[in-house]
Image (cartoon, rainbow, N blue to C red; front, side):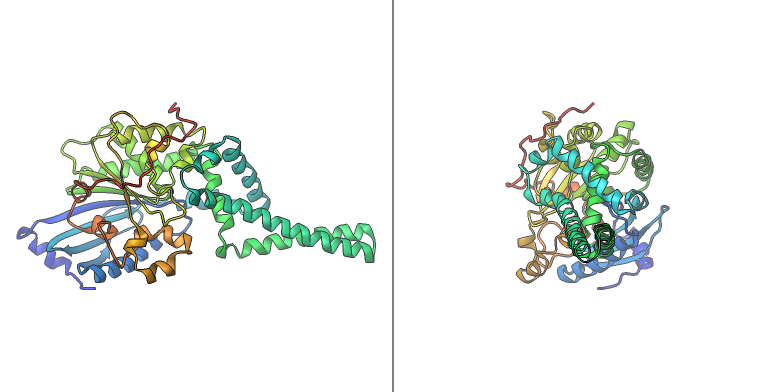
Length: 411
């Protein structure tokens, strides 16, 4: 990776236009420290720069905020710099995760009822099987763990009862059940059953409404992004990944409704690997559905949605507004595009990643060894605004736009 001297670039600013961008990244339901995203950006950006042949370098952040970094690039002769900030809500995620095994199984019951009892699960299956399977996976896996623990406990109890006394057999049978469940939980970093259960339970606990602590954090994010529109930037870009996509929809809707400053820089929204229907199809997601309808017709921004059929955790190529049943007559957004993993990744790379479902869900933030017109690092750190990059781009021919949602009320 070729290093660029920030001082040299600053000195040449008068000789050549230096494109300046402010980027706000909204993660999905992730309890990990935001430094993970900086390291991912650094490593994958260097790989993409080497593959594609441009100059790209990271430096310490130069803006206020809890966590971020500064990027300097030169792509196709155009110089650009970007200040990237992670809008952190990982503390809320950690606090929402039940530390007890009984608490997690209670979440399982409530979440299953929210999706199955409302009929949302069956309508979601009409869109994409992958994310529905991903939603069922923790339920099935946790129930299987419970069944194994109970089976072993019953077998040991019956053996003890036959050899000693029925009361002692009952005690022997009960003791191993919590021990086995604790063993499964201790090894959840390999199967992610508990993590995914907490993820889906967080949206389902209020039937699609945002919990108060999340609403408060989103209001802070809204103020942070709004302040950037007063800065000297050529673009303000909001990136929402996974669950962060539907947070971005509501945050931007609130900000635009409140009024944007005069002569503000172009505003853009990039949603990646979105799982919007998992929330918008729930009975109580009135706010999200209203925000989807509002933002989809808004002329004050550019909204591009990128997914890929190879990502089994996302609702690939599903127009989140249309399938939620709230598309207005004057809908203009989002532009639905495919990252087309089977084409933008070499056969060798695709073979290596194909069954690594969670890794594929983050591929949008990573390097492609056969890149097409989607390049996360050119979008976030290059000199071309999102609106110009895809100005004449037709939406994916495979996009899904049929209204499937049972609940379409926005209030």
